[in-house]
Image (cartoon, rainbow, N blue to C red; front, side, top):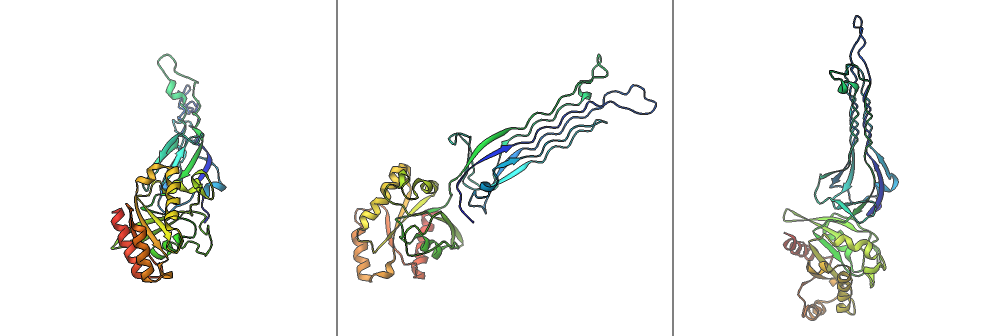
Length: 327
């Protein structure tokens, strides 16, 4: 399934049914009174958050959505059937914006939340409603109201416990595949990951949701590389896992480069809890790892740990550590 995190759609709620101008006609009743029923209400359009969705791709191929119209009223005071509501499923983390793509209407943060984005039109009144002591045979009736119609934007911001950030080819996808049930694309070249990947890790009977964000390069906050298109997906993460390739010749520069992009995008990202993970330790000896860990950890406010995705014990330690950061 392809990933899509922003889409513009047209929605139209159902119009209300018209009222009926009917009169009662029965044998032996020469002057039957009015018996026109009301029209039914038009169906509304309701957005509902779904746990098992993580993309808006379905709305790329169907951008127009209309709810059912209410049925017209009829004789014998029969009210028309109301139109069925139209439910549109969206992933948790979806934000609903007006046509300007700036004015926020609703923000889905939990499963099974519902938001009526367009109300159906009210049904018209039948002529029975206008009967009075001075007007015994009214021919007046009203038409149903039009349903609301809008153009809206849907934007998806991934909600995860931990957001994995780092330079391209730092091993983020390998880590996600090793500790969760996700199956991201893994290869030995930069920008293997082109879309955020979500995975769920289980440890000590508790679940941790992780999001693998495409690698950040210098200038990402201005749109360079995959840039701001995906930086927004870590805004809601509780903790950031900063993954660094331990074989990098300049670890400090690699670390500061990503921190700079996070800061330039949003200073709030720097206030999130952070854990630094030096990855690919299987490529170095224990002596080299200890020395690098000691040197790199100096003057760091965040905890620094090492990891090899090929070592099961190492992966278990990372899971336990992450659990303490999100619980």
